[in-house]
Amino acid sequence: MYIIKVKGKAKIPDYIQLRDEDFVLIAYFRADRPLKNMEKYGLEGKEEALEKLINELPFGKIQALDL
Image 1 (cartoon, rainbow, N blue to C red):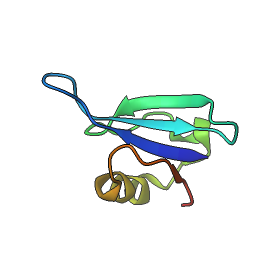
Image 2: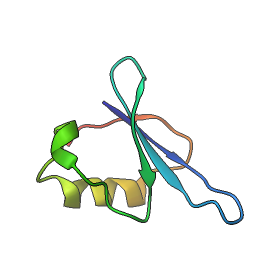
Image 3: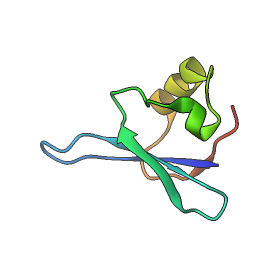
Image 4: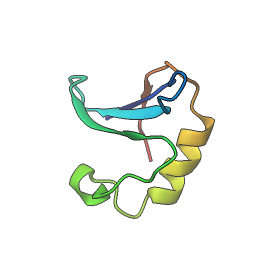
């Protein structure tokens, strides 16, 4: 799974994209709001680590999601 942080403009907030191994979009959510249904993506119990990663992630750079 891959993660990318997208910079918002003006009134549009920053967003996070989660993509699968084929780079198909599987989740899209605001960076300042927690992702719901984490178990759907196999990330249950990793909310704290994901939040820390999102805060440190540079904008526009795709990174492998290894939590």
